Length: 231
Image: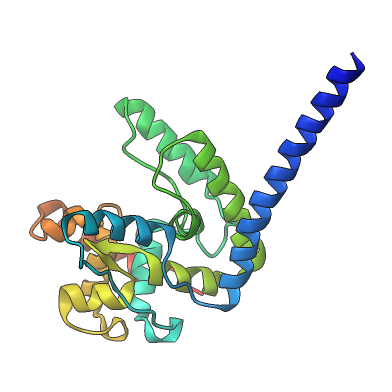
């Protein structure tokens, strides 16, 4: 019995140590990115690998721009579309999650997410696109880390710079130039609303720019933008 108890103690200790090391690795990255801009995120790396299976010389369209060089219209559009309570919550919009669960239950399939900008940033920076409870749990932990360490301004700055906006297109600057031929600082309200409307399915809308739903959704976002609160 003593040997079994000792073995179990060692096993539990090893598991705890492994968890601490893994979470420490995540937290170290969050601390680093609070002060320094990321180069390639986990999502970018996965997309680039997929692109290079078809074209070995493929490159991502990505260029970092500071918060003040991103149009306020885009900031308002993205908050309106993705996370209206961004300024007020601490990483999770519980009412939004509940609405998404009810909508999914009524449809019998996953049609709504309810993820906040902070949760999406956690996934984009450090996690895979895998759908599992383990991944969602890690996403929640990283979200708490982000909200504990970073200001809302920094979280939104990072999100706007690493969000996927098309096939190999990442960040506000690359998106603005890819779709409209202007820099992120010069996006008009209508252009900003359209970019925000693309976020749930960016690669699909990159291929289907004439989508009627995309146009309609862009108009709804445009109408909500004046009331959006941004840091």
